[in-house]
Amino acid sequence: MPACVHYQRHDDIGVIRIDNPPVNALGHAVRSGLLEALDQGQADDGARALVLMADGRTFIAGADIREFGQPPRQPILPEVIVRLEASTKPLVAVLHGTALGGGLEVALGCHYRVALPGTRVGLPEVKLGLLPGAGGTQRLPRLVGVDSALELITSGRFVPADEALTLGIIDAIDQTDVPLDAGLGAARAILEGQRTARRTGELPAPAADPGAIARHRARLEAEVPDLFSPFRCIEAVAASSDSSLAEGLRRERELFLACMDSPQRAGLIHAFFAARAPHRVPEAGEPPALTRIALLGEHPLFARLEGHAGHSGIALTERPDASTQACLIAPGEAAPDCPAACLRIALQPADADGRLQDLNADLVLVIPPQGALLELVATRATAERQQAAAAALKALRRAVVVSRRDSLLAALYRAANAAPDDRCAAMEATSLLLAEQGLCYRTSDIDLLAVEALGYPRHLGGPHRQATLTASATSETSP
Image (cartoon, rainbow, N blue to C red; front, side, top):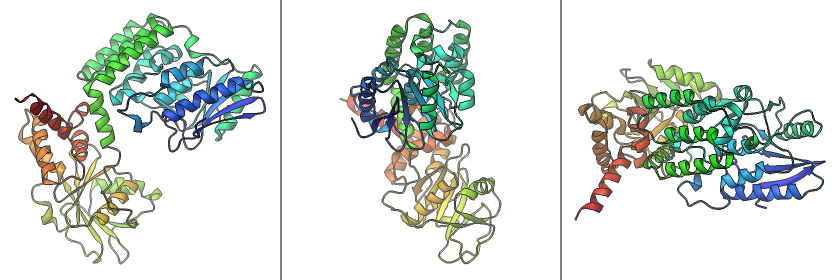
């Protein structure tokens, strides 16, 4: 059995425990381990019921991102969940932290779901250009109905435990903070006849709801008419009312593979990866933390930083002193008397005129016209000092992209505004120039800024990705 999944019996209850930090993702080893542990539990004559739980801070938080773009390896998740659902012994899933995507689909394949307080569940695959492809579009409607399933699947939103209980996604909330205790208690109650286990896939198909389907389709046509996967989600959920579970799963698989083949899926996954660590300065290492920062002048950002300072370990002051490590300077604020070794970080709106180098600052924090993503430009600071500032902003709950010498965001903003009739094409052309000039540490940072701050279509992945694809296609077709 893979080391990330373990089986152990507690009296007459077998426990399958996933231990795959940090988020117990459903990689190949976990999928294989689940089947081996299930077989062990089924063969254990001393186990009358089974519990599926996870170690650490969360239940299964979804797919393993390291497998994105890789050929599927057996066993694939839909097959694992079919095997779990077919267990001849009652199978209890214990949810804590988050149960997302394939993690929730695994739980839906179990016979009873108990959650700890604070748990959130969801099927966010649509945000990556996909649909829940391991039975989520078929089992969830059997629990919550077509209308609620459509809302949850096409939005991809996270559902708190209390709402999940009201909807019927989970069967109970246990007030303990120990997943094992909650699972053993639920399994014992089932064995004693106090609670009822049931196979979700054997529940009656949900009643057809053409009104809900038409309403959600109209909403999506108004909100995201260019997106592919939300409309495939509707088709898959509609199939849950039209046929048997097996036929619905077959239709879900067809639609899932169509989403996998969509260029939008690749674009959305590119955007997903672009957002994973844009605050990291390559090869900067781990510099000493900034723990004392002075906020000079007035700016709306300062109030937001102060709101998160309490749990960050960073002291924010209104004026610098001998211990101040960095000064954050509002636009128009007079040059402060900062200590000689203090980082000077000037705030600058993306639409401001003038060169960043004229601000007499080590770093410039560029404020976007919309959204919360900031750009931290190194004008004079070393990579290590830029990394220290970026880490401090992240500790204060501000998303930040790092760049050097000049602002990527300001250049994209100027290009887009200069061509209001074709903003995307203007950003695409500019993105190539920015990359050539070496202003970005990663070309994906250009894409992330354009998507989050300037409204470039997320499903295209970003202007640099799109411009590169266009250039590649042009070169392939040229004689």
